[in-house]
Amino acid sequence: MQSIKYCETSKLTDTTYVVKAALPCRFAKPRVGQFLIVATQNTERIPVTPLWLEEAEGKIHFIVEVVGASTYQFIEDLKNGLSITSLMKAGKPNNLHGKILFIVSPIAVGVASYAIQNSDIKDYYLVVASRSEKYRSIYSYLTNFISENKSFFHCDQDRNLSKTLGELKDTISFSPDIVMLAGSPSMMRFSFETLKTVFPNSKFVASLNPIMLDGTGMCGACRVEVAGEVKFACKDGPDFLAEDINWDNLIERQKFYTSEEEEAKRQLILEN
Ligand SMILES: Cc1cc2nc3c(=O)[nH]c(=O)nc-3n(C[C@H](O)[C@H](O)[C@H](O)COP(=O)(O)OP(=O)(O)OC[C@H]3O[C@@H](n4cnc5c(N)ncnc54)[C@H](O)[C@@H]3O)c2cc1C
Ligand code: FES
Image (cartoon, rainbow, N blue to C red; front, side):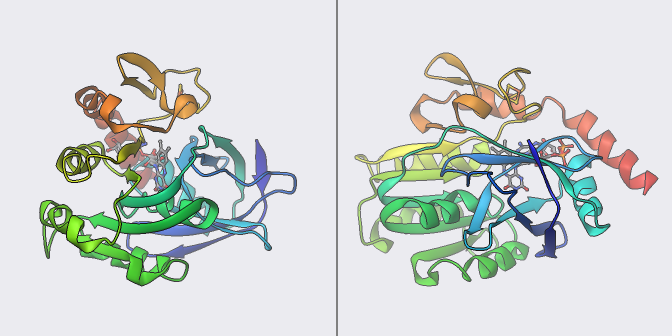
């Protein structure tokens, strides 16, 4: 675990920020599939997905969506000039190669952009599945790095995800080797169930983001059931074959701490 002295934060939506952090020397860059765990002196550990690497500058970008107490405090602390006090890598690297269809939520878009930058991908198509127009700014930010004509932004206001997925076979010019899913469990499950007959020869991989506490495989918070076995997303994942995931169990566990989380955020907003 190491500290970061320099960081820059820019606002993309009312709740979404891009943080650019300087990687400490001797901190090997995260491999594709891995994620970072960050914190300030005032927050719990927060898992985030690398978005882009400025290799020459030694800087990494990641998105933070303010959803609860820790993400709120994290952004407040950075705005007030505090450092990121801990940074560690977690998760198993994956081996993305060939032709990839990415279906990701705006906050999980790093699963696609970081892989596009750092994997041996032959071709790709990116669907950013968003429920709100406000996340278009994330898409605009992303097009600084990745080719706009290979991506497609979907918003529920304009068209529904089901229609977008239904049209994919005609939209993309290749048959994907891998369909990579990242976002809410319900979005990933829906996309998997809709597309498995459209692309019967593709491998479907889901990047899971269950509640994580220590990020080391010790606390059990990120327990998921995969192919009938208990796995820990922080050390065995976060990527798993979609067909092996017990989706009902995953969705149920995500709701476990909702009332405590809401109370923690309410208290923090009252204090500030
Ligand atoms: C592998 C992984 C990668 C992630 N990458 C990113 C990222 O790049 N950018 C980003 O903004 N967030 C990312 N997240 C989610 C982020 O870590 C959580 O939103 C954050 O830890 C919530 O902390 P909090 O104290 O602010 O909210 P809490 O008070 O803990 O929760 C507030 C609300 O957010 C929901 N929530 C909590 N944890 C998660 C979670 N892990 N996933 C989804 N919803 C959650 C809760 O159910 C609740 O409704 C990632 C999570 C994982 C596990
Ligand atoms: S976060 Fe504790 S076991 Fe994974």
